[in-house]
Image 1 (tube, one colour):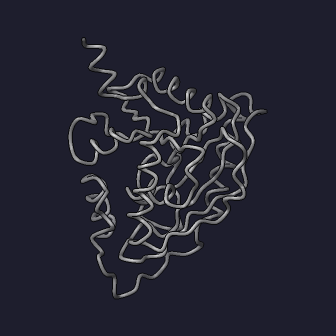
Image 2: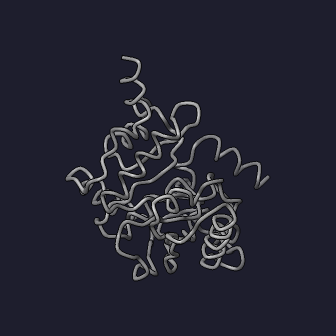
Length: 248
């Protein structure tokens, strides 16, 4: 019974990677919510290779996965790696995530790395897309990248799938009808990467590719920002506090 409860809590072994009716419903609901609230646009979708592949993105806000889903086709399915919420039986946001699926939660205290690796392999074997926020946590400057997490490219290298760099621009501070751009760069091959040095070089190339998609200077927000509470609506308490400290 303990093992069964653990699997239900952490999720990866029960991961659905198919484009199911439930996933289509989630995709449609996200678009119906995000597009009226924000002016969200995509550039570079022509850079997407044939699946499977991995998306390596920056991270400014809890809305970011929804911004990506709102501008991409329903197929191939995107599965997100790394939400720290490991208990999908508690909290409204977690319950919604658990119902629709589409994420591989990884908490070192509750999820084994091997379980996560198996879940990622299932995504690629199903010709799916793995999305990773390579910085590992939310940053609050549009023109900057935080250091990448160790192993942000490891899953793609292990399976030899290409990586598509992605920058979400405009999501740090949100308000009604704010322009948010999801920018994709050319795919970077990983099938010839062997060894620690080659992996470190790839990590640097992915970082440079994401940085090249970011603005060169911080945007100046307007005075009028209707529904500004949207900025932190989906951010966790820890991220909200970090933002306040950064701004204070």
